[in-house]
Amino acid sequence: MRRINSKKIVPLLIFFISTFLISSCNKLKDVIFFDAPLAIDSVQLVDYPTIKLKITQSSEGYVLLNNSILPHLDSTKNLKLKFYCKNLKLITSPEIILAPLTNIVDNGKNWLVDLPVNIHKIQFLGENGSTVRLTIKFTALNFDAPKFKLFEIKMNPNGLTPLAGLINYSSNQPVSFKYTIKGQDGEDYIHKIDSLKTSGTDALFGLYANYKNQINITLTNMEGSTFDTVINITTPKLAGNLPDVSNIIVNKIPTANAKAQFFVLFPFKTVDWAFQSPEPGGYPFIIDKFGKIRGFMDISYVLDMKMLPNGHYLYCNNIGNFHEIDLLGNYYHSIPPPSDCHHDFDLLDNGNIIYTATNQKLRGTVEDIIYEIDYKTGAIKNTIDLFEILDPYRPQLPGDPTGMSGVYDWFHNNSVFVDKRDNSLLISGRSQSAVVKIDLATKKVKWILSDSTYWNEPFKSLLLKPTGNNFSYTYGQHSAIASPNNSNQFMVFDNGNFRNYFTPLDPINNYSRLAEYTVDPITKKVTLSFEFGKQFGSANYTPALSNVDYITQDNMFICFGLIVKDQNGNAKNIARATDEGTPQIRLMELDRLGNTNVDITIKNNDIATPNNGIRTYRAHPIKFF
Image (spheres, rainbow, N blue to C red):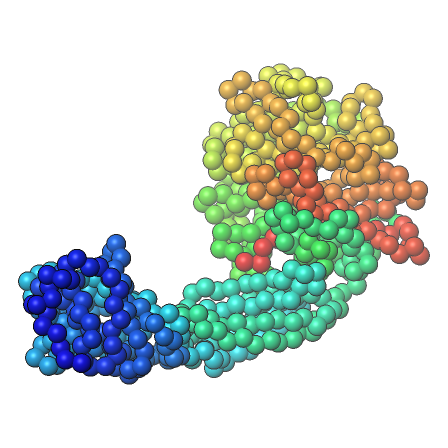
């Protein structure tokens, strides 16, 4: 077709703004004027002359599209685009300088651009300073599908995690990496590394125990082309000191509103009574919300473990040492504390550990010292002596093992929570049925939540003032933690032991619960803002252990870690070591409306050993990454 004189058609073109098809041949078919005198008359793909292109106008400039399908292209290749332009000086891009990649042919009117396929923005600079912006939006512009150059999995890399592995991979081009573990209950577990890399490592978590696991591996390149492969990994049967599959009962199918997918707990099997453990226990193991075992760490006597800012975990063993570890069983650091950590620990902003300690040599009492120790050396940096700032001679509940007059275990501090928002500690004194808030800077008590019985001045004036018709105190409680959204709101696991100093409740008439309180720091008034568990009555009565967690502000988790039953299935206390009773565990996720999203019981179902059971000090929702 002959070339049209643009000067003759300018008066006609100013009345039309439309989309034009541009021929792939070298001859001009249609003329597009962008900002005169700079003009682009035609565009073509040199290596693909049959591909038809079109230009459309947008609010930000012009868009170049393809009308027919482009072939798969290697990510290392370039596209050759030929522009017929008038009065053009330079072609650039905000993504890369293109001028060095262009060739001027045919007296400065035909510009040949060797364009990397991942470039999407081009700018044309006219000889008079005018500019035209062009966005390339080619559809079906796909690289060749990626391929593995290397793929290997080493299961149980450190000998401590038989349900986990380490993946090494490399590809012929930058890719994201994803694996999908086929779920037994209709919900797959998916983990993805979004960053594009030619090689990398990843941890494989979430495999089922004693099972042929199906895992889909997916590589995806920058244009969305994928490579998929399926592998199978058969995992071993776990040690006999863990609950058997038949011991884990799902009381309710998890709802779609469940926020937690996995839970970690530290079970001890028991024989004949609640604290008789014939073999090592406290092995961290992970179950999903359907009650299936999905993780295990071959480390015994762990009471609790908490995530560190770097994604590793900190735990304390039965001789009091702290250890930093990851879920693949890699050890990073060990800290010998100056005295045993018996119940709980937390981290300060400076990285030091603060924990519930025992120093019986000091005056013959236990579990009434809080130490801050250096994370690297274990050296004591600070001490809070509860014996000095509270009343060690206040009588305890009537059924407490130490009686009403003993001071040996007068406080029994079983919880420490650092609230960095107001530089304070929340602690839980089981023997005193008291939750106490302490100013970390001054080491002074800010307030006490407790039944007012037997409190004398100056402590009586520090008691929070209950308000509301539904208010009730906690007794023998555990796990005091502040709300993620409100420093003046906290919840505890209220074991509920005896619930009275003068007319104690029998277990069969008692209950345990999650209790949340809101404090007015000015008036020192306290309200019971939420509770859950009372509705179950003695069915969930838990005389010791246990904890609560916030999953979100409105979704909570509760671990009934030591529900104790007699041989008739009735609730029992375990005030003394001679008390018999069979323990079991119940884990529940709930929302603020009281709806239960997850409900799992773990107990001994072997009728040949009815006195045997299982307990855990704590449990938590957990994420693998």
